[in-house]
Length: 535
Image (tube, rainbow, N blue to C red; front, side, top):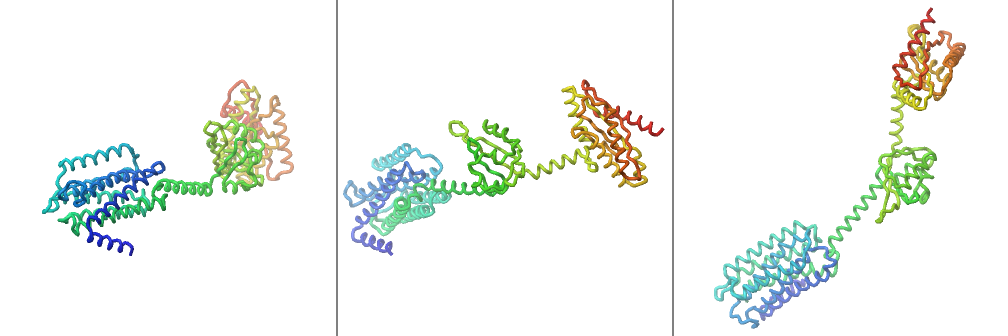
């Protein structure tokens, strides 16, 4: 309703005195343009939108040309003119500057604005246009008695096309502006296009078509006033700090996402201070450890969560700020159980390079560790007897032989075969044969020390590497084994008796041995004993 009232008043003013209406229309646009410049210029240190700053500078020069246009209007008496050509030329010059500025401005959404260069460039263009107009080099735009020239009409169409392109570019870059500000600037551009098209029809500068053109110009600058000045004063963050607001919103969203990720990720996030005291950990750590952060915050990490055997070593690494990548360490939970954690650690340093803490990311690999241990055990252990299989025995044999060679330590190798195993399987069945193998393995375990290595080499063959004997006589070991076998047979099954044929070899600490070589020597001795039993 208020807008309709203003339109009626303006129309009545044009009927009363068109020159007064024209002056009011131009003064309004000039005041708005200067106001836009003053707002943007005084906010330039804080303004993060170069588009608006560029537009404000360009509109200052537009306002200057429009002021001269107003003073040069037919009937004002400021310039010695007999027709409306000068004012019309100045109008076209101002609109070219305005349209080109709006077309170029979107570039500065992403580019840095060199203010001095912009002032000089637009100032030179404006000066050239004014110089051409006042020296008669600028094409005529209005001829008294005839009306608008083809140059003037074509220029209005070109200006309208430039404004359409400017609006399309602005829509393409719409995320760079507040939605309300964008809508008002687009409305301003559309009103300017309407004004240009309306001003292609008039014959007299006091005619109705001229009135419509200037009325639309008032409307155009009113929209621009709403977009730039009113918004800049009432909602400055929507205009002056649009990018900052978007950046803050983006940072807030990233922070919330990071916090959500830390809380939901199935990894431990741990922060320690320079002394190894607990500063922070996430909810997954609470679930794994059984402790809440409040229970242990400020406590020593090493004393609270590490097994006693690892505390000193891990504290030393921490104090030296050693970074670890993919190191598995046990962690003691609240209920006293140990869980294996795969840690990735990094020292936190300040600007001076001093360590101010440790950031650790840990993955609970307890089940994987247990599975790996089970698989490793299965790969080197015999399922039936619980002794090392041939592969496990070979691995430990090679290790012990290297140690013995280095420290000049004697080793005894014993190779044994369970007598009459085929008869037990064929007569009593394989189940009974398995019991005989288990009984034999138990006899060997009772005979030898825990430090000795006992293995089932396959079928009914067993091997022992006595690592705890330095100068012990092989006959003593054989006698001990015979006693264990005899005791078993007295209390064992009446269906058969356990009997072992044994070959034993002392390994010279000055020589290197392979398992096949030692087994061949012991095997010969074992078969010699087996033949003696058969005779």
